[in-house]
Length: 493
Image (cartoon, rainbow, N blue to C red; front, side):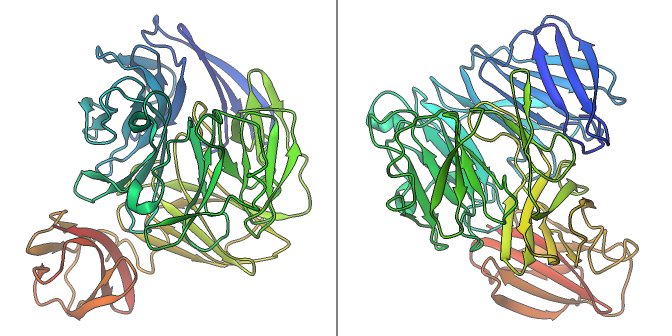
């Protein structure tokens, strides 16, 4: 909460924000921030993110009648309440850059109406919007999980739904079209289930580079838990049978995924005092744990993820497995780096994470990106693909430590030449304007599609590059100068 990237503990009521700030040694310093009577307490969900870019995270309270934002001032000493007059029966809430303009927005599931979202103008001023991202007239929207399911660099969203008619409770997969609009592709993806669910756990369970889902059942009225494998072609396959979830009869409104034993494979937990340990082959072993749904974070800075619920910290006893933690700080992207894809490659293979604000149904967990690597003693490469299209690559990062990565810091270029490389307009129609900070004698370029296939290459003859020949979709423009490269993502209308 104070910009030091150590996980803090936040507890709130209508007149106070209590923060236990974590110190480097794992101890905590308590501080209370009195606030005026809050109009909407977070009776259903809480999310955190830095709306103003001042280095201090703000809070989103999802209440039963509306939404309140608690905005931190520029030195982190006080919070100001911003509430909206619209009635919102809040469920899951998130911070996410919905329109990919580099400013963090907010999204709130609405239980009895189309979903709502708040677009940030860059100065922390939010505008209310309703419709376009989950629009069933009577709601049923419970758990929104933002992630990139098709690896095109855009944040899509899985919507866990519950209650009422089959139409109302059928889950949705909302594909980001890259132009500020979303399309429900759940039918073609195979995710249009009428399971009664409040949340899902999204992660790459087989380390094949694509995000899978555990669709968690909150009741067994319309079927049980479903483990869905991402096939990498926009579709998902049901692999529940034999996974360990087909015989699990516990229900939960909370489902989330983290690597709790640092073996390099994501585990899954809910609020039924059970943890499913990933065996690395898309099967899971059930063990009992002393907590149910909880916030997850490293609360003693030892590289192993702990849990916090109510007033109790459940510390992870750990083991000898190795790990790495990545703290993301956006420059062109939002300052938290929410929406970034983080990848590491070791002898185990490649693991991926998406930086998200808001997991499961209710809780807010760490914004830091955590990987276990088992007995591997080195990481060959760390890659961060930012929402802006910037790609940072770090070779052989040190393990068993925390890395703070600033967007553009590890491009194979210096700030004096390519760091200020920008393009406009986005989305593009017939041409792209390319803006370089300095003038160069020779500039080469390549355009790739989202699969990595080279579409065209050449030399820039001017600052205007024609893209008229491209089909509508998402692409990457790579600029090469004096042996160095930098990449930007763009959308062709």
